[in-house]
Length: 275
Image (tube, rainbow, N blue to C red):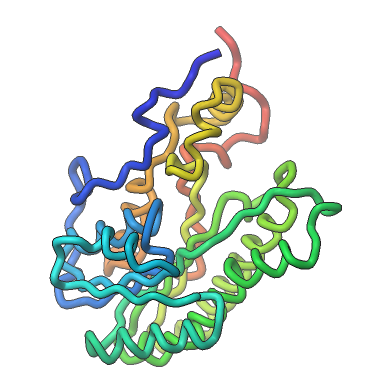
């Protein structure tokens, strides 16, 4: 068995994104990122900041949000429960009041609770649905007037779990599949208003939340058998896709669910040949 390299199982979220990045015209644009305190949300927020955008980050705790935008004056933090109507409406109103507009909304807040259908009790289903699906519905409803004014973009964080089944993930996969259908419907309904709606579907991304699994050699070997790109994904991989999908370069892309998964969904499920 081959363990994943240690540096791949850490959360990759430097103050500025690593490597060579394409440049996009986000200067003067206002971007709202939910779930922006860690992992993918933090990487997405910092990527937009590095491109000159003004970024508002929203989530449940002030300290990690502040850490995301530390050193950037063109930013704001908004503490709220983004699964509730009160929290969502307040944050959207605060961002418009503070920054005057919203050009991009990245709906990134999410929750995964493992379990089979027999484990999916009312509490766990309600928690996942309220964050993964209901929160997106509430955020879209609240943000559409602002996005209509700027002919903006709504980007949802889905998952490759939305594209098929998984063992022990009944509730999570169901909510993420619903996210994809919602994105497609909103893209059609809002397109005539100049609003584009897409989703990015991450594969297995190395963050603090996934470190224990990636440090397990058996898990890594099984995952690696499904990968075309032989490494775990980084939050920056998702951030790069977000920058593109929300940019003018993607102006004819709407209603799309883009897998960013190292090739997992390119496979029909057969294991990698041993040589």
